[in-house]
Picture 1 (tube, rainbow, N blue to C red):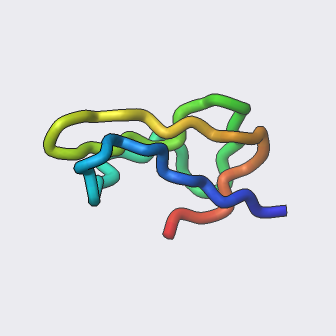
Picture 2 (cartoon, rainbow, N blue to C red; picture 1 turned 45 degrees about the vertical axis):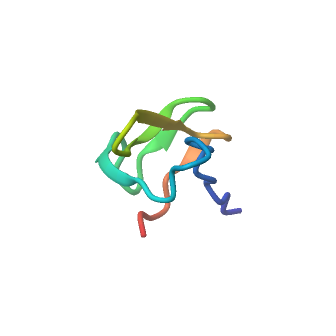
Length: 60
């Protein structure tokens, strides 16, 4: 079963962010709270954790 990854709230005035780095490739195992990717805005850089354990199916 696929799980949608929701981008965390990055601030009231932030309307966009760029994925600067993926820590996992499709097909790799992921644990709960393991970082999937890094997001960057003009004010902050944040890592996005996995909400579930499983296998990363695809990056779109």
